[in-house]
Amino acid sequence: MAEATKTIEPPKAAAEPARLVPQITVDRMRQSEHNTAKYDVILQAGVEPDDILPVAYWSHLAATFQAAKKQGDVEVTVIAEDLKWRGELVVVDAGDNWARVVFKTTEDGKRFITKLGGLQAHKVVFLPGHTVNYGGIFSKWRIVRDVDGKVLSDKHNTEGDAYSWLSSYAKSIAA
Image 1 (cartoon, rainbow, N blue to C red):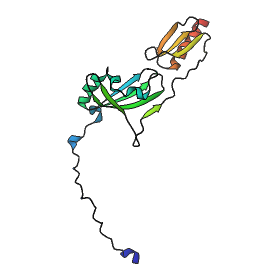
Image 2 (tube, rainbow, N blue to C red):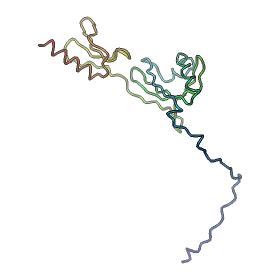
Image 3 (cartoon, rainbow, N blue to C red):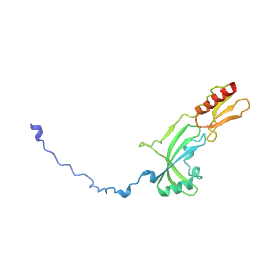
Image 4 (spheres, one colour):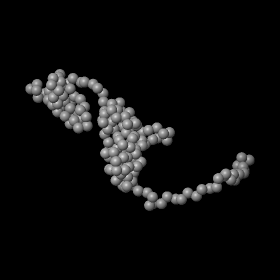
């Protein structure tokens, strides 16, 4: 019973005076889809994260970023064409021919960069004398005849689609 009758001491006065924080009002909130422009950029193979930080790197896209920045935030997701890494950036400021970007970071300052491992250099022989490989952003996955290097088919979105085409091709020449 004696435990229940403990006295409660008033809190000690803080060394700093209390700070009055204004409440947030409705006019300070917007849906991010109306406030944020998001772009996906495919970087050339071999480009590293530190290569894209200079303001001159973004000179060809700067006018687009500048116009979007007038409306709100600008976020850019970049992925290397060789699939080695992917990163998320924020455009801090932009002009007519320059843009300053920074990587999104965690609380401890680490960049949001995802290592993807890159395209695996492998050769699966499905039909002797033919190779399926990645030809870049425009050609995408393609089938190449090894003898003369002629591209038989390209612009397949996935490696599986290319092998499916090669399978059909193999059946047509076997018939």
